[in-house]
Amino acid sequence: MKYGFGVDLGGTTVKLAFFDRQGQMLDKWEIPTRKENNGENILPDIAASALGYLQEKNIPREDVLGIGIGVPGVVREDGVVNRCVNLGWGVFNVKEVLGSLTGMNIAVGNDASVAALGECWKGGGQGCKDMVMVTLGTGVGGGIVANGKVLFGAHGAGGEIGHMVINRQEMEVCGCGKRGCVEQYCSATGIVRLVKKMQKETRISCCLRDREFTCKDVFDAAAQGDMVCMFVLEKVYKYLGEFLANLCCATDPERFVFGGGVSRAGKPLLDGVRNYFTQYAFHAHQDVEFTLATLGNDAGAYGAFKLLLDAE
Image (cartoon, rainbow, N blue to C red; front, side, top):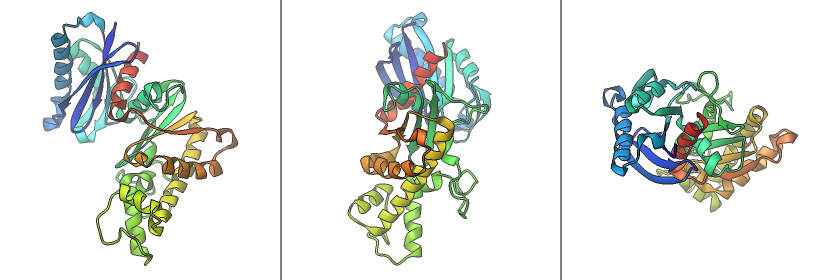
């Protein structure tokens, strides 16, 4: 078996990549995610694309290890998906269905956990066996790699770190139905929410007042000395620092790898979070490394292929 596929299944597009056994990406392409009729076309489309690629490149099926795939939902280690709401999927075994469509070996994982595995293998966590990826985007996601393997957990929900509660006094409801989740404060939308909330509660001058703005605008304004934005980001750093320090007590990682749009803030974000992390962390965790993800949109494909390799 010389080659294999890594697939990152998203709500809009499916990213497919073809790898050699050493993890070199040889090719990549995308197909649309057809979600009509509860996503019944998604797996047949993936199968057709992969098989079509082999035929086009004249690659014998016996030279291909199989397909690894990351999907946006709760996934058990046996390949059973427990609902992917944004795809229209219910509960079924993706491993069995895609395997029957392709005649190949299949490995399945949660998309965020698979991306973490990709970063651990070939990206910002390279060289680590124990790593946590923190994805700060529209929401907060992540993945836990323990001893070089993705942590699935008993219910397939290992690594759902964005919905750990960090503020019991929060009155607004998170998208998950709980209150006070990490996602409500440390995501891009959460940071914008905090600035708007402070604008309502104070008369302090803010250059973003009375206009629409993004999370990037908040970081830019803070860098220019805007007091409201500086105060909010300091609160975000404190929340993240305390949260990650607590997470260390359960996962004990060598490194935290930060991805997602918010991570583009770079060094100010890492320095700000570490400042509070060191205050709250157990003494054995003081040397945990903080770094940025490096694989970008390819992390999921790399991790999906690595999941396939690990399943051998």
